[in-house]
Length: 510
Image (cartoon, rainbow, N blue to C red; front, side, top):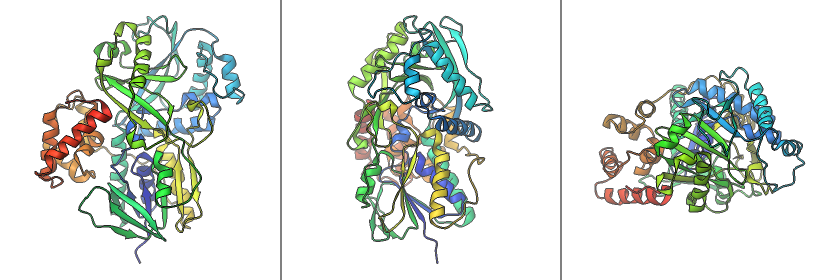
């Protein structure tokens, strides 16, 4: 009798990592997403692989240690995607925020208290702990710099008198890490003779102990019914909506917040950063990053409570002006203006539901929540972040296999994520000016591409390129036609849909 697969709902970073971990342990897996892979928070993060320096303020030491361990692993196992990054923290005084930091550390600070500006000694203490927890990680330790020092970001004297520097890491394309996990899982499954399948633009529902999988967008796919051994709900900010739709009764699990970023190619900002990042504060105390990104600068993020469909969320003008003000306070000589924003994006963090007035105080720790009233074992993944996707996958696989009375036989702690041709292309062609047709064909054939937006946004991440053009969109549509993924008759509508989404969702007009 064929083994019942574990069905994973959600093709973001956590669903993909969990699929790989289960296949590594000899378990068949079907992964289902109602949209595309990496469609949710994975694609809208700050693209940092970090230990969570700010988590130290809330005494989440184990989370920081886990994150730093995973940062070191990703730097080692996926060096084509994850790179070291030096970040600078502006400090204006010696002891600012010291009392508040102590109250926060002991959980005595009243909710909703406006954060105080962090002084040199508070940051020094935090970075000392950060370096201690990351000992052996192979990155340079903290260092103190003058604002006029050669090679340091040239921040305004009104913002800082000195700069603390520390090490973290950056992943420019987390969408590619999702593909890397699933490609590795597919290869492992073939070697082990397991049933591994990926369904995008399909919706799953429970009917007794069976899962029914149906296409959501008119694809030429017949509905499929399967009896799963377990269900993993890895739909991120949609976790509650997924449980309601299955249906699987549950208390409210998610309380996500929206975060917006924008990308600028204004050269002066990049010059002032010197290829490094800044971790600063807005006027309300909210942490904001200014990060080097290809030939531009990525700025974010906001942190605003959100209810509604995460697919509909977009950056507002108020948020963009808020982030612009942070850049111009930090770099007044840059003169960054609204028309310097090349694109913007917004996503919903899959955070646990808590009654916290300050969004930044909501834990970033992940949780596994089982639904024991269902006819099939269902576990929902709540919280988590890019950095800890692999450790969350290991914890999830262990919990699911235990429910199935199976033993854990392997883990991915030392398993490299091999680069694909597309990964190499993105690494060497940062301008996206050169896109070989053979490589695009391979992406379409082997990376679960269904429509034009899949290629533009989540395989080649072309919406982050200043070279994206209408000509490129038409050329990619022709490639889809050649691959029988699109008909010539439907191509004009597909192109218009892609252009409309670029405009409405990212502020990009071609």
